[in-house]
Image (cartoon, rainbow, N blue to C red; front, side, top):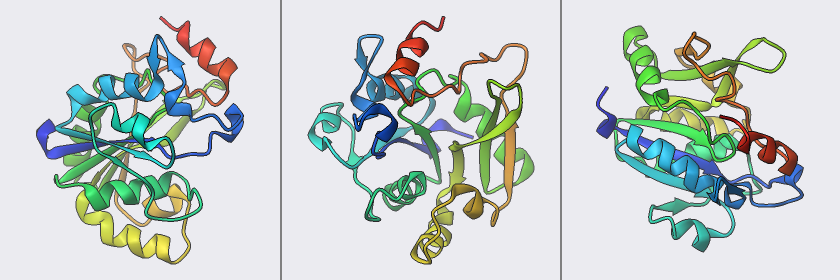
Length: 203
């Protein structure tokens, strides 16, 4: 899969309720806003990048890429970010990453793309070992075909909000990131300031 056929969407539209209402993407990580760190990690893997945010839009716009708020109201969750991204995506594929997991793999998109094409899937979703040792799907790290927009419009307009309920309607391949060379903390996300500071200490 040619990276220029993929648009990346950084999901920064949440309330940040577990971080005291702070805008997670604008919290400092290694000297820069976490969403900017995410942008620098995602940018080389895709052709275009946009940010999905619902507040502090001018701060995100200062990163120099398009910023789009949810088209659904009331902070409808990550699936609203998926929908917003698909509505503005002009490439054949779209990949999503959250703004609060800045150490995600630098070969994320390549591996998701390889699995999607190999399996003839519509969605490729990362899976990783969590702190309890279990391998679990990471649905906010998904590569999907742009043509799924109609399906997602229909699902959300009917009140659907859960990612796994929507992806279950489509051919989805899980892509494990738990090999010998994979960073065990790559998918750890910072929900609180304490978790953010802990993440900063990762090698």
